[in-house]
Image (cartoon, helix red, strand yellow):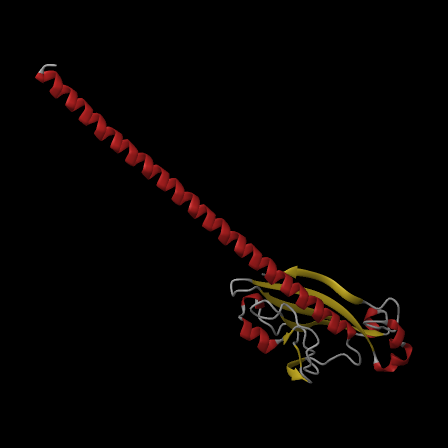
Length: 223
C-alpha cells in the first residue's frame, strides 16, 4: 500500500471513530431525558394519587362527623335549645346570618371556637365516640338555626326548626380538608302539647303527629 493510501485510510477511520462517539453521546443523552421524563411523570402521578386519597379521607371524616351531629340533634330530648353565640349549657347554637359567608375557608382554630368536636356531647362534655382517630384533626361541627316555624304556621302542633349543620373533616395531613353542609328539620312538641307525645315509643325526633317533619332535607359539599 502506498503511503498516500495509508494516510487517507487513517483519516477516514479517525473521522468514523469520532462520529460513532458523537452518536453514542447523543443516544445516551436521549435515554437520560426519557428516563428523567418518566421519573417526573411517576412522581406527579404519585402526588396526584396521594392528594386524591387525602381528599377522600377528609370527606369520609366530614361525613362521619355529619352523621354523628345529625343523630345527636335528632335524639335530643326536652325543649328546643336556645340560640346562643356563647355556649349555653355547653352548646353553641348560632343565629341565622351570624356565621361568615364562606366558613369552609376558616382555619381549624376558628371551627373549634365556634363549634364542637364530633363524638363529644356538647351538653355534658362526655366523649361518646372517637371518630377518625388516624386523621391529623378530628371532625368539627357547627350548628345554626336557619328558620323557625310556629305551630299555627306549619299546620301541626309542633314547633318546626330548620337547622344548618356545617362539618369540617381532615385527612392525615393539613392538605386534606373537606367541608360539608347539611340542612336538617326537627319538630319539637310545644309545652302545651307534650302530653300528646309518647317519647318511649316514638323513637328519635318525636313529634305530636305522624306528619311532623324530621330528618335531613339536603346536603352539599362546600370544599
